[in-house]
Image (tube, rainbow, N blue to C red; front, side, top):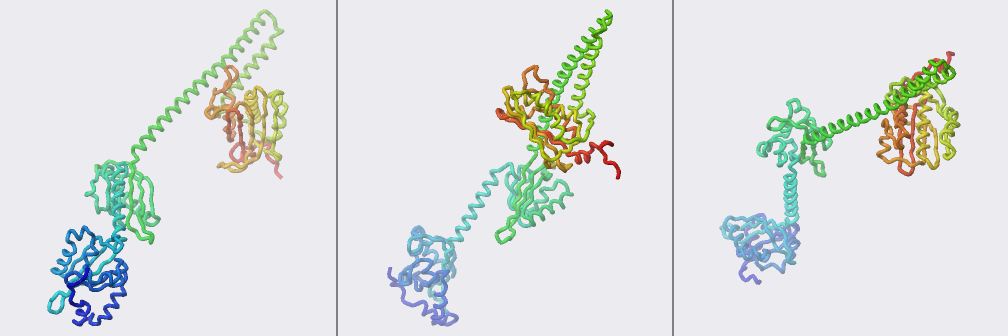
Length: 533
């Protein structure tokens, strides 16, 4: 498009009027050195009269491609059809200045966001000489603003779609800048009631908490976050326990832009936890009653058997004595005494289970003690089971009731034997170990391991319960492991059982080394004390 309407050179005419731009070459040098802005002159009709390097970089046209062309060539077809070029010229003509932001078109057809300014230039007589036009490409800034607006929109959608959480945005002084629907629901305060007010006033459950809350905000500002439980008062005056989270919002340079605050009502969670705890306690009590019933029934059965045998034997002895037959009297009395001894042992086992049986601890070496029992253990398991002893090389001095310990070991060995009806391998091992225990020191570990039928996880978990047994009816009372458990715990030791179906069972008993046992109160008898000197 040829520029037939331009009959003067705006640069020359501007220079001829003196002033700061009197030197045209100096003005042109200044304008051409600017590359971040498109700076060019239009004549009164909007025809392009000059073109700087910035204009070429931004719009893509060389000077000889645009000088003499109408500036409307940079407008989008939509704006051209709407008459925007002439509209903008008219505003600049009448008001002396026009600014705006809109899309413009480059030489390659791509569009960019432009910030434009157009100033009318007059001579000393007020005659319009043309327009000075400056355009800046603000596409990147516009995109950042659009991204920011989209991010804010998404945040608001997210915040409003979580009604179970109070989500608040605060300024750097802790004043509310955003208050979502969840915050309104939990606190009872509408957004307009809290906007620009300090969040501390909304969270106070007691005036005495104000200093504490201020300290929490100071902590958040110093380390960047805070998380904990806090009692909060609603607008209605009711209180609830809440999970409070504060996050300091800082940019990469460390500059604080505000805080994010979230509040979750824990009332329902606490109610559920309380209900679960009550249910657990009820189940525990029911389980205790069931175990007590089993224990009572078992004791009654065992004592009834003993008393029945005792009564029968004494009745026979009485009848024989009445007939004058005293030849069997000694035998009957011995049988009666044996039955009384069985009843006494049963009582002692039950008391050990209840951790009430007084123990008679003595000091011994666990390895030497097991070695002395080896023949008894071999006879107990029978020839179809191979016993392997793996005893620690160093001494394992322990202090415990050896009768109770022997009973415990025999119980474990018999259980292993019964778990291997077709034969198998039984390991009896000892070791000196370190355990994480408040009493500290070293411990003597006794392990009994078999490769028998094993137990499921559920059965293994109940192994120490009284009268719980995996054996057929009539082959086990179910008191063995519970008594072992009671004895070990009474001896300040620990017991653990590990089992897997088809792979066998392993039981570990840990007792304090003698020095540790004495330190925790099992005591040293006079015969064990070293003599003075």
